[in-house]
Length: 108
Length: 108
DNA sequence: TTAATATGCAACTTTAAGGTTGCATATTAA
DNA sequence: TTAATATGCAACCTTAAAGTTGCATATTAA
View 1 (tube, rainbow over the protein chains, first blue to last red):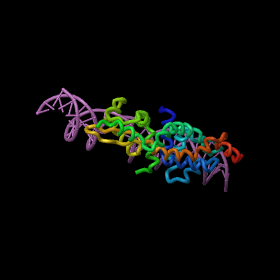
View 2: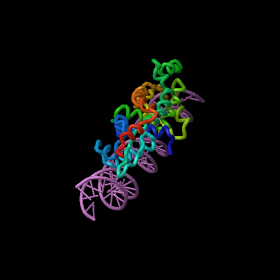
View 3: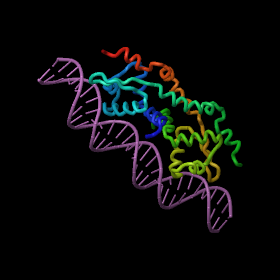
View 4: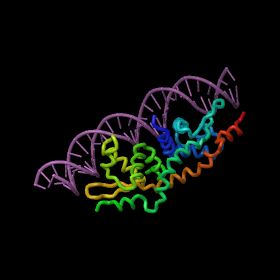
């Protein structure tokens, strides 16, 4: 399997999955798979696959309740992505970006 | 085409592309396509494709110099991803995560 | 000017991702 | 107990992504 951070980035790289995750976060509680899939045009099975991907990435958790499965968000893994990004903050704040130092060293 | 943020997430979701980007960032200057591809096991053409993807996402820029093409990093687009993530910071800091409010409302 | 280097373009293969359909099964409502 | 609901499992299709190879071309070094 791929590394954790790749798995996380891939999970949120899909717009449908970001929507599902966001819906769960703002709901603040849990939604069943049917409730989620009703909000999308794609089939329930398609949504189930997305949910599995999000679950594998740790971004959602599932709780069985009778015949239903409730999903709720877990934003904690995003901390790792934030850590990854933090490193680059110093670079995106550079007014010149790397072009500056590149041009300084450019062979003429 | 897909939206900007999806394009960015997909660009950095690939581990090889993250490596290329990181190498360019820490180099602080520019590297030619050959110099980059020499650091990887995959073919030059494979690297060229990754570079194209990174360029399309705005994460690197290219500058032609004779027969060479120099790539340099541009971290600025990551700001957008950071903005996306910032929203969820309040949730990953919750000690209880959404499980708490979910259980509170769970039908018994 | 000949050879080596750096690259682009295009076609191709392989694998993974997103999505569908059909069917089986467990749970709950009528 | 019969019907409706919520779901899983598995097979399948389609498209896109990752990566390759071969060849053409421009630039630079010998």
